[in-house]
Length: 320
Ligand SMILES: Nc1ncnc2c1ncn2[C@@H]1O[C@H](COP(=O)(O)OP(=O)(O)OP(=O)(O)O)[C@@H](O)[C@H]1O
Ligand code: SF4
Ligand SMILES: [Mg+2]
Image (cartoon, rainbow, N blue to C red; front, top):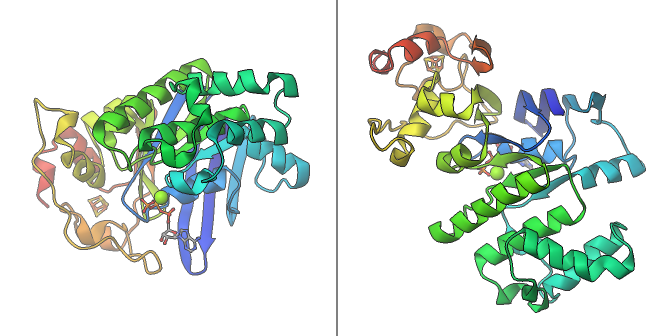
């Protein structure tokens, strides 16, 4: 079990993550992180992978706080939690054959004896649905989807227990996206992984994540079981995100909710509920009082003064 409590990350005058609690039970299990650009998704992932320091709060693994570990303990933790990056070209060494690159990871981290390296590279490529022959290719000789699967194989090479996928499919076209999603489905079962999956795409989260957390300006505004949240959002921001994806519920497409105004300036967050300048349901209290994140049903939490109305009568709650 991996969990964060009141996790905070600051960059100069920006609170990128402003007190976030998440939980990753033992795998196979997926937690989706959604929210628009700048909401803090990648920073949460980087903090959990200990690639950026938490300003406050804790990250516990099996009951132990790893927020401040250093040295060899930190190196071994960083193997345990692997990040699969959005920028696939930044991860692969351009002139190196992908088989050699994978073999190097296995050697540097002493994952298997030298005699087993070739077979392990073959197994890794097979695990992510690729032809082992691709070991002979260099990154520029691969398609976008193949490259993305190589980055997953590279992350798997060190035998992690947790993966963090940062927009794993956003750079790919739809058919290729599908192959990558299938790969994730397969490895999550085979390797009993738990993972954070960061995505703008709610359909991807619906397919791969049991739970979802919706972020707005560094805070969770709604979290809980993915199906419940996507079927009946209790926060107007989730409703707006859902309305942008008609394919989630083709029989009952939402009326499209267009958010007015740009995303807020993270260095200068709005008072009260940070969403209030753009919220179609905002009332007076919203500009002065920040709604706490509260449990509304077992396992479901939401931070909105009007969540009860929104849950009981989504149509009426559309108008202030
Ligand atoms: N290295 C950094 N230095 C300074 N500010 C940063 C840094 N990384 C992120 N930020 C700021 O922290 C906030 C959260 O950024 P983050 O990258 O986590 O958002 P995100 O939700 O992943 O967005 P996107 O969907 O665009 O990837 C933003 O205001 C961003 O400008
Ligand atoms: S608290 Fe108010 S402004 Fe914030 S989401 Fe709820 S209704 Fe909208
Ligand atoms: Mg990001």
